Image (cartoon, rainbow, N blue to C red):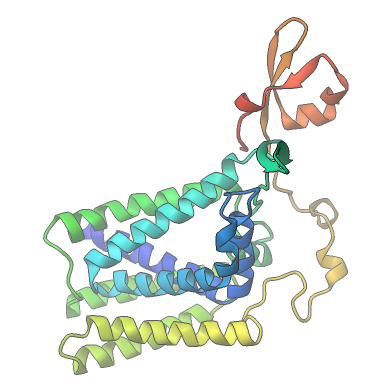
Length: 319
């Protein structure tokens, strides 16, 4: 069990640090993505739209601080609960994206009358998706994003059992540091290589150095260490917000050929992501039912078959 907890902490900590830094690298872009989710036609939380930037920055900060907390073993009960909340939150967003029906509608009242409007489906995962497209050529599909969050949730289970339900996890011993810091650094290096951005390695080494200083000088170093990580993260996030991302994955980044970036996947010779929906079609004359894919719907021009209609309540999700 101890080795499983080590492994889970290394993977979870490293992933949250990288994920948080990628978002902190472009907090404004992340806020735009949150704003899409908050729209009335999406999750129906328009009152949160004015606060999207603040919430985006808070989420970035939380990911980085909690990622290092898991690596260092600081305040693990609080950190584990917080990570569970974050993971469930992001899982909820990605599940919405994966199950959203672009043909779906919702009803609003306009001048006392019910009006149907189309729903907004968020098509990718924002900054993380931009980073993947900028480095790997493709983003995660909605279901892949959801499964990523599901894997993180599963990895949090042994940490939760040890930190909250078991003996507890305290600030690393010297032996723990050798295992946790080396292992998490390897994860950060590998992911930095994947994303073609090695700033997270420098950032992590800086945090490790400051961690050792505070650990030796502070009597109760847990909160000072968390504060130090927060200050360094906020400084980096402020710089990215005030100027430009240190690694700009956007198609219109400085030095990029915008015309080249506008080319389709087919023109670039790379596989394009496909989002397939299952439609339940009902024959209004005979009551016959058929399940077809969205590709079949378009290729066979089902909308021209006037006797057939989409049963919106039983239309499946994207896959």
